[in-house]
Length: 584
Image 1 (cartoon, rainbow, N blue to C red):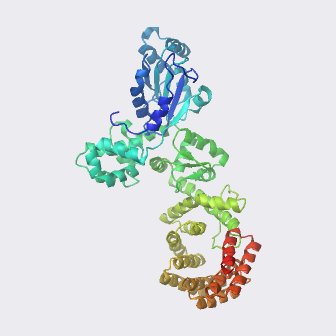
Image 2: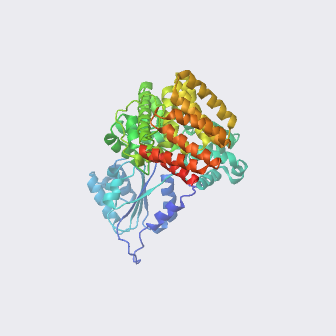
């Protein structure tokens, strides 16, 4: 291919596998070398194999055999008999002399390749069964197979070397576009070219289609092509405009999707609905309405077909264009009720599991949870460490689920997911936490969740305090105080008194802070799990440190630490130890 670029590491790996020339001293086993090049549709497997074969064909003086096995594409896959017949005729066997029996054809091919150095390229294979009859039987030959399937059976039984193609690196993607547009034009619109790389997710086929669109239509700037690709809903259409199906991204994805059995196809569509960046086996099972045991082999099959990508920790993710394609298939093949039920099931699963993790992580915490519905298959949270690991891993998914629920006006789900995201206040910027809480606040106002609204306002006021946005914090806390009076809610009153004290602490107005904190401490005793008492003890310790009254600071810090330990509150214990250390 004229503008082939990148893949230096993969080309080097193929070079290293070339069998030694006859008589060359080499310790490698003298057997047929089989390399399975796998990857998702549009990843450039065929381009790599053909580019490499052309480059090194002189190392195979007895010739090169190539066949497109049509595993993924229009029409039916080639049979082994078709491929064997083509190879035998290419080697000089008259058509009438080709045996009718596949096993006899395979035997004749192996005989004719004995003691020869032939490179065999089996392109676009569908399965191990399609490939195995075509393999030569003696050393000196090399077989390169490309497939969207992982062809694991060849690795296990035929010692095949597996080489997986992933997305191009950013420099490789830029080189590919530059090769199509020309260096001058690419340099003139460098920002647009960079955005084109991002929107095409560095998928080689998508990059070729998008760059060629600008190259073929000289009146189009790269920026205009980028504008066409900006909308997620129509991006695949823009990348599928060419009449040749092999150059249409949607058609290439279709060929993989249509090969899936019904259960795998349905799970693929469900996964396209997931709002987050990746997902675990239990989350995928909840989304599909399956048990984890039933979902596991289906996910493995989709990964083998390179329609999803396995990542660390037993999780899975999509390449972005495949995610868009999967969601599009769900839109066209599933009913609205089917899609809504799947999404409700996974949102319920996230909320319920986050609630369970929150209880393990913060046993003294009181959150304004609504009634937490139980999913069909609850996920057990074992202990503090498990809770911390789960919430840390799922943080981005919880935030994504929150924004999905808000965009679709699922207000009760939005409120619950905002509360589920409370853990993130310790792991994201205060501004991000304010943004999250504001989304939940709007939903709480619409559903009339006054307690949730008040507590989320308090969260926002506290975050504004840490950002030294005194006026914003005071406005939110004034509203909370008024709502506490209207609702007759003593716990909410304690909350706002503490947060007013915190606001004054941050302003270094320590005497004024003490007045609010003393009142909050007196009111807090006996009205909840003890959560507020320990929080206020810590703030009182800080206030007394600010005043230089260190013995009183130490007393309050030690009381807070004792209460944290009594409650088994490991998450809060470190803060209490800090209070004591500061006073000391």
